[in-house]
Image (spheres, rainbow, N blue to C red):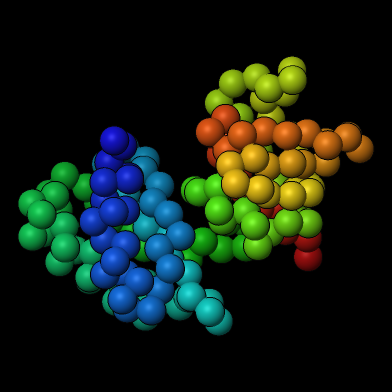
Length: 145
């Protein structure tokens, strides 16, 4: 199991008990970036409070010396970590990078037409393009302003 999933499983209940959604965890070297969200958005005080909680948990689990921690909102161009996160963003435009070629594609920018279970359907060049979430390396919302 990847460290991101291990840490997610460890801290998510505490973060959720504080009234936040743990959107996901991104790892870059020894940096663990925790993305949190809540109705109405996330501010600096929210990030600080969750950061303190995560430090406490990781100290008890003797993991704190292994990683640098950062807490952030997912932002407008949020990264997606789980298949079920896509459902609320049907109709949105995404920048997607796949782990491997699917129908001769590895990267694309497209509108999400539907999200059912682990299957995502995008509008790529005017045609429906289905991909399993397991094939997605990264998917980021590309908001229009």
